[in-house]
Length: 289
Image (cartoon, rainbow, N blue to C red; front, side, top):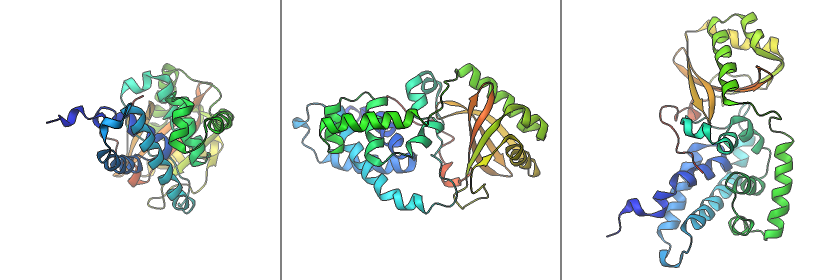
């Protein structure tokens, strides 16, 4: 009898989850895609599969693209700003520069501006270095067309992603200063760590209170953050999506804060308060390439 642990699906599950998550921006939807993909894989004649890894990535990509198309209307009707689901990650994710950047809140938010096919092509090519011929099979396009899509998607993302790459050490320093200011609740302390043109994007999903539109400027953002001290506040530094981040407890309600540093200050803040997106902060996600 074959050991289930030897099944290629089990072997590559972390990779498959990562592919689905990067295409969808949602761990819950990624898990659903993996379940659907398993059912398809379970019905395949394995003796006819020469490359299980490529075959499984193809199945997962197709299911993820289909699901992303189906979710389009739901995201259009979403209350307030929609942010990716934050994931607790291990230090090894942060050490893989390509993986850490690809699952960062900044890049995942940019990927939301791509269409489903463009997003899948970008993820497979830029993150996982999948050959164009294999991507073509996954998205149902000729290899020449996939090359064009990949080029357009790469230029699109490059024009919108953070222009300056910040070292992990600098990220930690900025996070520590931000945490110290947040714990005081003093507007001036917060102003000292915020860039003048900082932007705060909050996601409450219509479930909990959150700014319905992005908040621009150090003054308004500092006021929003200082208001957190109107309720009992607890903070903890964690690794989310491959980068130093903050886990909050606001009078018993969880929240996750990811930062985008620039020039030693905070240039962008991603604040997730939707409780449906905060169910995976106690166990590291199986992100891998």
